[in-house]
Length: 254
Image (cartoon, rainbow, N blue to C red; front, side, top):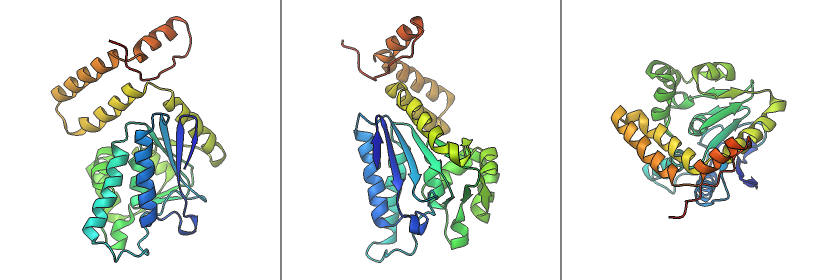
């Protein structure tokens, strides 16, 4: 984990296992997400893997005998929720493989940037398993039910261009451009209005299972909150001055 200004980068660091996630790594990932949520100096998060791969998913070879399987899954679910509910933008930077829970970890981020040679799979069925880490919720919302079933039931490996076409990757960039592109993207997100962006993220998630009337009411509440922050006036003043606004999310004094 490293921080450069307002951007925190969390790196899954088990390259000898293609960054398959064992128990200790799940715990460290959860702690990193909780720290990012609580630290006001962090305005955006980048999630990536070391050594040329994003993540091969859960490490099924690790010792799991000490914990009941349902309890273990509940602990992993808490990490998926922490990522989903993080009130800050998250970018997945993907090289190499992103499979199983590793792919759903990337899909749980707000934006996904990969290299052209990245490979993706909902590999669970080939391991005698069903979807986890939010895949059953994420996939049909991103690609529709039929494509979600295809990906889940066949466990095929797909390339970056197909993932881009399905809406499972936001950008595909050459390997030599990936780091610079993600750094620029994360900094652009980090300098956006934090309260307004957090509310937009939450409303987009909630809108998947709300009526139009409920969505409008949520938007009205969110805008009321935005009107009480310094970011609206800052944006208007910057527009008049033909300058870039400086967003802080600070509450206007009563």
